[in-house]
Image (cartoon, rainbow, N blue to C red):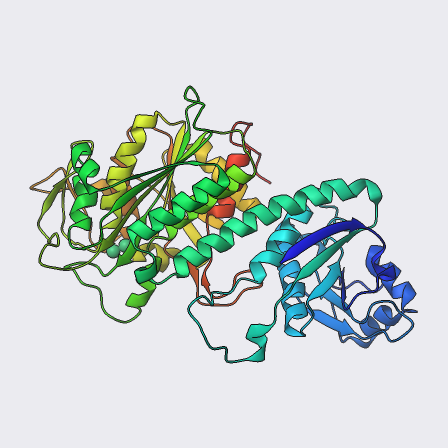
Length: 508
Ligand code: MN
Ligand code: ZN
């Protein structure tokens, strides 16, 4: 599907469908919607006076103007309350329009840039949000289906024309759309990786996907296998991997690898391609969802892809420790002690707390880059889902500046984060009698004790950990987030890294 930008007045366009908008409670349309209303001899105003359409967020009204008007259909989308309007509403209404267009079988339509007019948003940012919302809304995971149940599944959008009235804004909006396209393509790719069944996404396959992507995007790529892991002393990652016949991989991607003197930002993503729990086996209900236990790794891969396409100036390294966690005769067991890359030892009290083990070795490995900051993303704990649901990721950090950057990016991308404490009292729960620490701290504060363990592997580096167990998948269809893998974190990381070398944006 492509998005084309051009100058023009939307009311003059011969199209199957044109999209305009209205804020909630507005009785007299303004801007492009006003121009369309005028060309329609006041039909939009009439519909408003009937009360059929109130402009509530994501509300739609479809008009059939008849032979005197160039477009066959006019779709009005509600922007919601003007005082609550922001970039995320642009994403949502763009998605709503795209979904509506697809559902009526239109393959091509024209739209104005929501938010660039009356709402006064930055034109490039609004255009980026429009492209993101439109492209993210059309995502479907159909690769393994050979039959379609409904006609709806066969419908597909081909082209969206973005009409810009003022000629001097065309270039700005074109640029915003291309940025949004690059980011949305990365997010949808991540959704594919996360939705992919574990038999189609083993650690080796994930590494192969990363290699192919790196080649196309211009990133450097490396994958470390078990022999080298042994040499490096990655006993925790190898411990988790030893129950599976699939070899583990540490996938390494690098953006701006030539800048050796620049301390990089290192992104680390948990890549458990299937988590059965191991010997501490999970219950079978919903175990299939554990194919998505590599959403952190996928998000980092997607962010690397997007920042390379966007040529951001910051040097960035992505580390993805990937393995399966399975029970078998060779599997690691409760009570085992594993030795990590930095020499610290961990008693395994539950083999289902494997994520922190693979991250411990990856975070330890990250230190060799002498990074400016380390950020890890992991579907780490069910406790985080209990605390924050599918609404926000848990944010844990030792560095207030890094938190400010992540929170600022989060306000732009609407990928919510909520900061959790790392008070030393919680450290008591992971003390072990036989090793330096144990990998579980019991039920209380489970998301925090997991983060407390990770903290022991980052030294004094500015570090942030995002527990994305709740936000990596959605049970509900949302305007630009169809049910299933969300691709959470890609947009957040890209937004943060685009401005990493500039002063921290102030809170709004
Ligand atoms: Mn687990
Ligand atoms: Zn896991």
